[in-house]
Image (tube, rainbow, N blue to C red; front, side, top):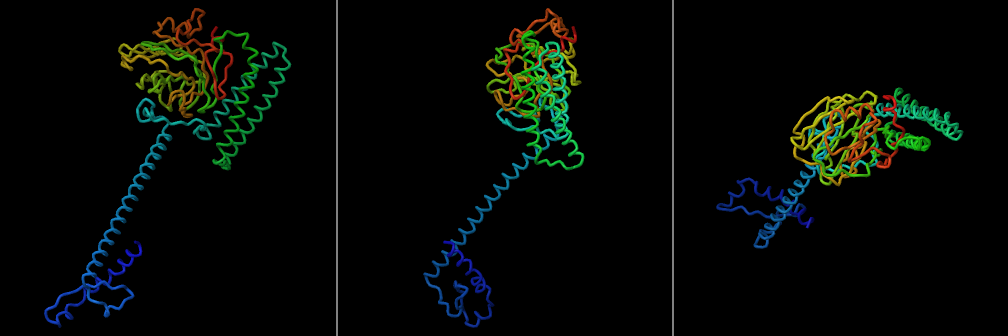
Length: 438
């Protein structure tokens, strides 16, 4: 018991005292031998009775108790060491993640910056981890986009003499003005050093919620134009770097031994425009991904194998891009604005694209259909996303890039409003790039 062990510990000093007694006293009795007697601290040493058989048993018991106490203390120390190792490991992981977050230029395809298969980080509901200054810049770009759309609506309403549309336009314009004041207030707070980081998430959430509401109202207004346009003349807009704005293609991809993926794209986001599309299948989240992450060039991933693409498109203008690939020798080609800009081979050779997956526009998937990370989200506009199960010829690609009337639609995925579901505030509105070219 603890009390017994304590008494045993108290007897130790007296045992040592008897053992260390001066030899002169024992020698005065002639031939003698030393005897150790356990005496309590509050007992009389002179009156102690010489030990017999019972005292030897008591001494043995005391030694065993002391040994047990030492073993328990050793076990406690081992447990504490294990706890320290666990805490050190966790601290190391936190520091490693901080380094990765501080180095957005780390290539997703380079291995270190990309999550390994099986690591399912679910960040649904998180806000962007972008610094406050970058967020303000994104909000400013979003407000400018909304203004442009409202100007188009105003022109449309004048042409159609719609009083109701004009009234709604005025209401939305007032809301945008209020948002601009909020953004300006945040800028002033930052400049004066009064901005409180603790309230950043809450304030940003309120502003993003208002923006989402505005996008929806504007989309409702733009439905008046929908009946007058072809089903493929629309574009998707992803105004903010979030993990909840995306579009999902209703149809999955079949097994493919070759493909061509083409689209119109417009972005000025920095650093990196994010992930225009990702295709995940069970057991492989990176079956087919197009991503520009951090300060790296755009990359195409097939079965988690990577090729860097020579695109220069982050200038806020519309660009047409195509990537073709065949499983034989993993040969790929990249086209920008109708011209081939790069090619290579040995990209996932002899690996067919697997079927029964999920095709998402605007987000990179870490799990099948989810696990979005705001830092990898696409920011910009996207249109005419088409997929073929063969390599397009240079002439066919050029026809798509020049908006030829003979341009083909994808035989696997064709760009049509009925084939796309949108979520989280991403919006559809009339596509203008081809109109500007014609």
